[in-house]
Length: 179
Image (tube, rainbow, N blue to C red; front, side, top):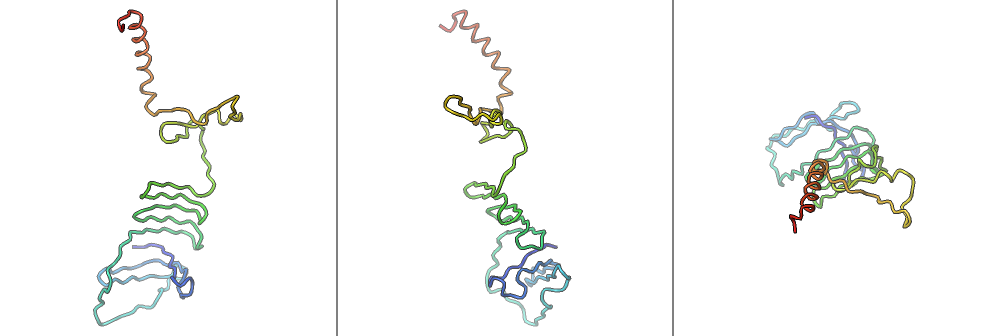
């Protein structure tokens, strides 16, 4: 198991190893021991410690399932964080994508650029942005231009059938069979 982790001290930088980027090189689940080396010089974070007495686990292990990937030495660099309730992909602390399991919230923090045409931006599955939005004409009471237009995803499949339905309706109405 080789992961890069940023160790943060609960004392906010008072520990000698606070904000030290490390690589886990060995983990022994039977003894709950982790061997970590500093990324800067591959030296052990702490010297090996030996004990003759058996280690007793005093409190239950709280498995949070958090996974973190950090590629920069900067404490404010890009980071990917996944846990049981949320996922985040961040360029830094001010910009990123966040998705939460509870409540179904998806948040984009920071400036957003969408590189596509307006009619390809789908909103809530049933509408797209009106292509006239890019024409430069503002929507006013005199010239109302809707921001969205209906674009039902399966409408393209139904369109050929609608012509046949209209023809049949015209024939039924002309013969008076519906009256």
